[in-house]
Length: 280
Image: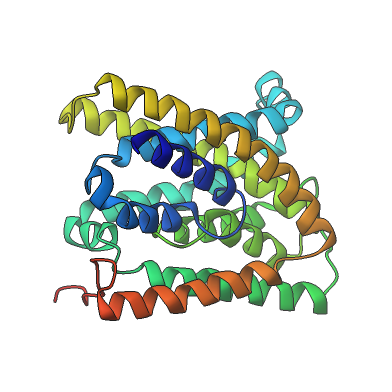
């Protein structure tokens, strides 16, 4: 059962990290559904971060030419824009860590239903704007202010249930980047974001180890990472083609419907977690 759940988590992470539906939100829901089988905290935050590392490998492979270009010539416009776009996320994450009560409240899933609805709103608004206005920018012609706004949208994606890729692609489309550039910049932004999350998680483990890694857990994690990397590769390729040719409205409908369902489940406490007002 542990290995089956690990495969499921890896598949969900690989697909949902790059499709605009929120991997963190889906992983949270699956953890609630499978808690009776493996325990509430068996697959903890470190496991989730390692799944993100697996999807990072997928991004690095798909965008290997751009990444190699940055490594060979770090002083370039794209590097600056990626740094600027990462700053709001770092600032927001540090602020959350300063307010432990708020951070714990979010981790308990109180905001998941609302976050899915926020993702749906972002995608719908971006599609509306894109269909009314022609894109005027690409990655090469975007400005630092565009990167800052897109980075702000990525910071919102820190909230559990808000899609990082969905919010950043929506932000890029809102700043009138063409669809291909919006997808490319969003996925390139995931590289420093995932690396930052890994560093923070490793720091927490060194400071206060939360669990002992046994053979079963380690094998399950490696299996899940393999599934996440493979599915993530195909998800990136699929998403690039999809956003260029079709758009995001279908994902907006899905996340909106899911958000309503989750809110109903929260209000009825069907999955063992509800909606508790912050401070309540």
